[in-house]
Image (tube, rainbow, N blue to C red; front, side, top):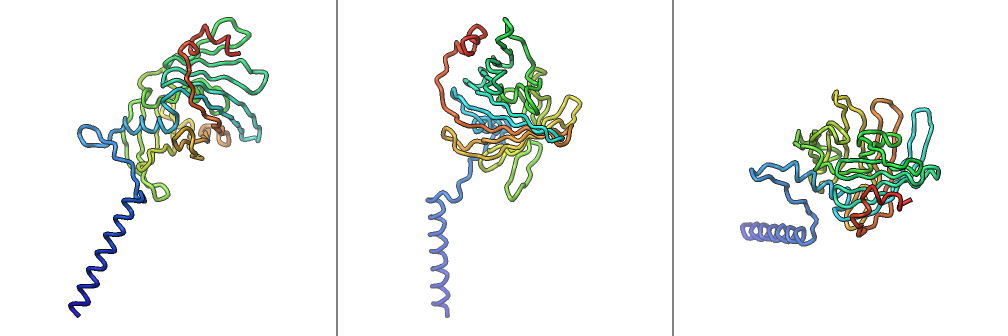
Length: 264
């Protein structure tokens, strides 16, 4: 009896050891390293910075965006844009559809935004928070730098469909950013964004964005669809589909007001 029990225990230990070695070698338990500040606590700024890089590359890139707007009464509208971006500070948003608005360009330098239209001789200064189309603000397309525009802190952690998420509160660094306050859900394992709630200055929930359809684009699993729901007018939403992303070596001269006319 003693001998049989010893053999069984030894065999079990070997099986467990083999299983652990297989898991380690296969990456079956691949988990992102913890994002910690110097004091050993989770660092909210590093979380937001990493999530920004998942959403868009740090290098220069081009991507096409199709926006489908739907109103509560069933009215629909389709618009298309091409975005050229370099780092976190320089972006061009060019309207490609409808044809009547081709040549309309938004130029972002830092948090300064100008609109150029062929019928107007000088660019027009615009706020990032102004609506561009449907539920989409100018800043939603022109600037995707949450880490640079907000002070982040971790409010809590939540389980959604069996996965743990950080819930971060992002407060605006100044009044020039797109939203006054954002609640941001980020997956703890892979740092993918799941949901964002955007609030007005009076702390009223304005709209909710869901990040969906993650797919490989330029070396990273990125959200290729954003669904933005109007919380003030039920039934209104905008769906943004991103496609044809390509890395580009974009010269600095492209992101100047004097160069805009050459992009028509």
